[in-house]
Length: 77
Image (cartoon, rainbow, N blue to C red; front, side, top):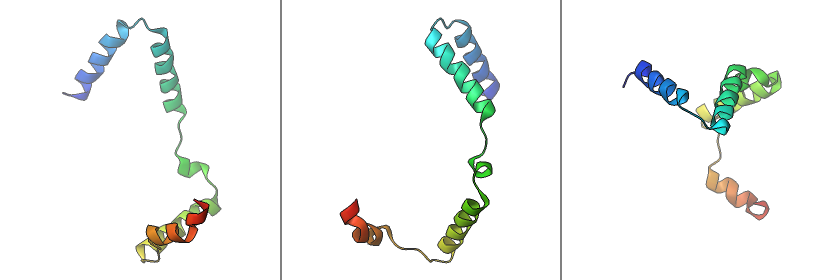
């Protein structure tokens, strides 16, 4: 089914909708989606640099297997 046909089906459904709670949730979703921003743009330069370093470490194989980390810290988990 094409995206246009799906949108029309949703419009038809919405026209017949009488549930105020669902309508309020849809309005919230529309507003939340419009205001959404990329989390990457919201973090600090230091946080971005840290993530980039971690990604580079992973690419270079400088990682510790999950099993080893769990074993080391299991008393706190």
